[in-house]
Image 1 (cartoon, rainbow, N blue to C red):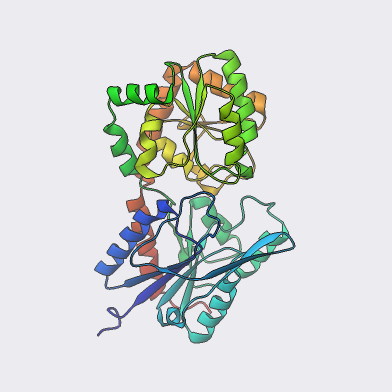
Image 2 (tube, rainbow, N blue to C red):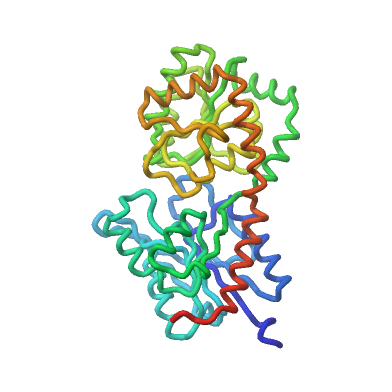
Length: 381
């Protein structure tokens, strides 16, 4: 067997969320065409409050021990020694996965190429926090980097790290699948869904995502109360699960214009977006930007300082809206949007145009291209 045929790449991930399935399946298939075998090892979140974890038949679940030290959530994964027979190991750049430090040390000792995949920094923390200083301290000591977005690539390059060893993957979901699903929804289906949920004929805002503190659900609720006071026909649909789902259920229980439907994934959420006018997320925004583009529901957020890197896909006034970070400004932005159908149409059309830039197929191609370069580049250590 030739060296090319024998190459193997291993990705180690903390867990397997449902939105990553298409990516891993596509990456595995594309690499097989290049005579490269992909192994995936991932842990399980014991609590799984978001209820978004799945499995892959060819992936390997590893034991994972979680614990807290000084209020910080940490974990250790137990990985087989066989990973060091790989030509390249790709680790997620997260301080809390302590076992990654041991894997990196072993990879260096055994001469296995190593890559990081991540944000470059913790966007939900201060840039110069102890955690981010630690992250900067070790993040340049790898053979290759897979950066979520162009901004992340700039952060990595500033470590410093060689730009030619960074692959921008443009983190994505199956946007084409969502857009195709939306195209199948007809007016009768929309009418039936409105009747089923007891939604009137007025404008609808939708929230779809995990439910935890950084999403700022109380902020959303107060803003929507203000919108409702100005537009009495306004209604709100809430999709998701998480530690703050109880707050959502309590809010919805006493308001007939609020509809909580629990978690929905992939095509399950498409009908609910089809009857919605705006996508509301005043707190942390990440891949939700792409849901908004694919499903024709303009995202309205705030200039919250702790968004995930995918926020750079959103251009306020062109394919979505970003208000000042206060409840009054956010509510006013929602009202202005709902009263301006022409603006909403332009935001929707531009978002749909941008889908072509952010597909899971493009992400697979970018990642696979980076793997090929990482396997062939001269060692940096």
